[in-house]
Length: 131
Image 1 (cartoon, rainbow, N blue to C red):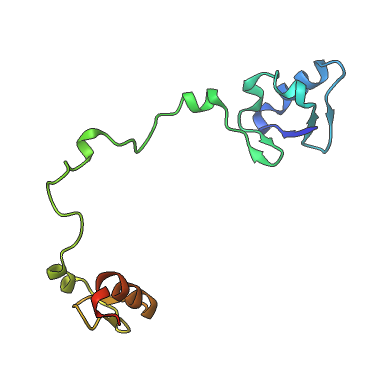
Image 2 (image 1 turned 45 degrees about the vertical axis):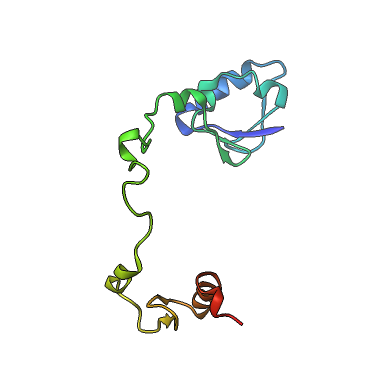
């Protein structure tokens, strides 16, 4: 059985639908219905909007179709390739505020928040110094 807790504003309509089924859909608590899986796939979509199904919020395709997509990138939002550096040059590294307990690299001006970060940097950026 699939446990469905209808949204408060749809409980009456859900109960009318549940009692109209043969056999009737039973309740399994004061606010949940035990819907057989084969019946669940054929029930009206509008009854499920806002419901909890087996403890998870039901996301309806009907509900999603009415929402506008937010934060979708447009081609204008992207910087063309090759128009600038994709990293901060080392010359600019000194302009960033550094923590008092920073770990400095002894081979370049970079600092790191952790000793592990500094050691990883040394192995990757300065492999020639490791022996």
